[in-house]
Image 1 (cartoon, rainbow, N blue to C red):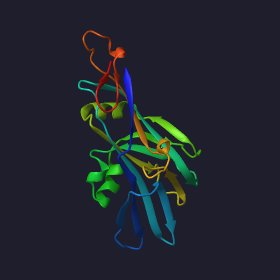
Image 2: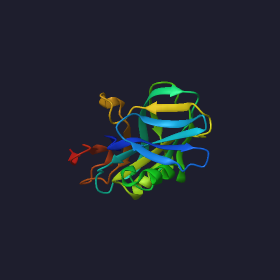
Image 3: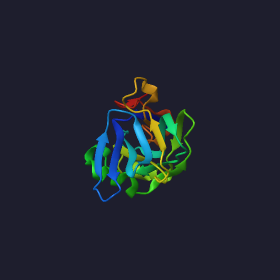
Image 4: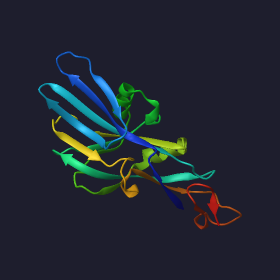
Length: 200
């Protein structure tokens, strides 16, 4: 059994801005600030923010993922939002703004209704679906982050992002996996360096 922890390669949020009186919404990706999620309605002008994070992996040949954890640090909160962590079918960096906004809520959620309102770092086990997904495409995983209901105006939360000056505050993905035995040695005797290969 081995594990590797990876820093996000691309993160941020996408904002849908709309005057509810029949005006078409506009969409904007912001990837140089905090990861913002939530909903706000002021004078019939609505803003919805949905976050995202991409992770790139390089696992040993034949590795089987057994656990996937998202490590994320809250920065500020208003109201009482709860958080969903959702599956994405491609890396966030490949989407235009409107499509990214839709993608974040289109797929099944790895986790739902998470109360992360205490300002601290969280380690979230993404469960069996994330394990299945990472075993299917073991070079990347992308997640969406959204407020569960997106209906309570003023429920807004910010998470620290790739832009944070402290590396330990940036979103990370911890992946636990097994590898085939090497030269008859048990799997547990092999550690992966996370970047270049095996260490014996």
